[in-house]
Length: 471
Image (cartoon, rainbow, N blue to C red; front, side, top):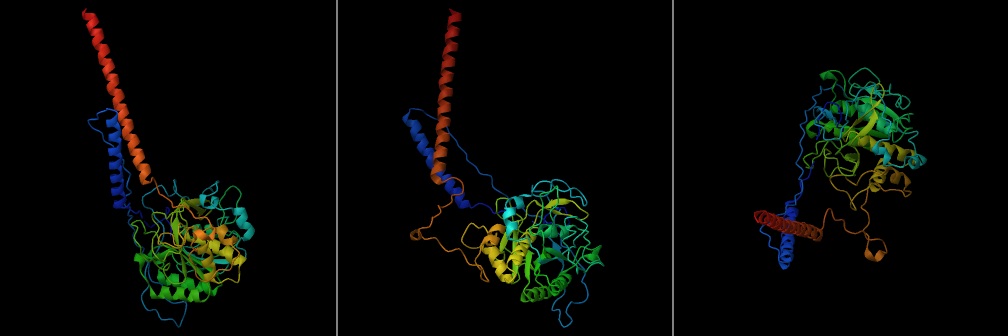
């Protein structure tokens, strides 16, 4: 799901522990006592001294998110299937909310110019080394979204025939919103002279299923049109399915759940955005990302940390760049956008590369390789970025055959002869903090001594001159 100039808002920041602040205050007091002792030995009397060391605290950020109400689309892709509950509204991961320094600095214009520089999300990759491994040739990725505009020159040669439109009368190549076109570009945009942007799998094919993003209220899809698109994507041979949307209000839906279960059973790898409701830092499930067999993708920033808006939860499998993401837009040109909407296709592109290199691997093996080779701070997954931030080169370079589920890294024992990494201390240690505060107080004391001494000399000279004039 994505934060860009589109329609919808998405939005954690974790507060620092109060225990840590208490320890800082305690250590600061000890340092002050020691410093005053030193000053007393030198005979300096300080009437008052104060030192304040404060850290800015980050406030929780909450973005309002209006729901998208979609009309139900009659019919079902499977005649013998019973719908257990009504369709629910879905939403894209777009936002026109406040700018937190993460979105495009200028308004996106369809048919505008390309961005010449290479995006940071591609600078973190050794592209030449990646291209030696695979390019996505022969792999079809279904994009279930707002459509993909094939008039953009970087996508013109990427489109596969057979797309569908459930909210209009096209073959899936109309995109009024621009969301699906951006998703497709991150996966398979062709190289273009004059820009550093290119898709992760520049020879893969895109099969567009326009499930939402039509005109008017009747053109807004829901879980039923999404479910139909999933089943049709499987029927038309898509090996990888990208879904950069979720249900409104995080609603589970039986029809959607069954469609995902069907696709997974048929061997398709579904890559879905985790959602953009994570500004409060709380864990919550989103759908279809939380369904079994789906590779759920969170958004990471330039520091390989969870983007503040990215939804957290135990269902998160992996993270990928989702901030300042350059991609294609309708009618030509490029724009930047933020969100898990644009992290998911980054992973889908890596999955397409793996599928080309290892065509006999199952969907679960491809997902496992992506998870096990991701960059993470610990041995296993966490609720923020799952198994870590995807590393495309590492995923393609590892020669072993993965299992069907990821396993934590083995612990490194001291007797094994391996290198034991030092514990990482975020910020100052307690001893360093004590020394710093002591130096501050000593410096302030010495400055006060100089001021007093200088003032005494000045007063003495003034008195001498005054006495001389009187004489």
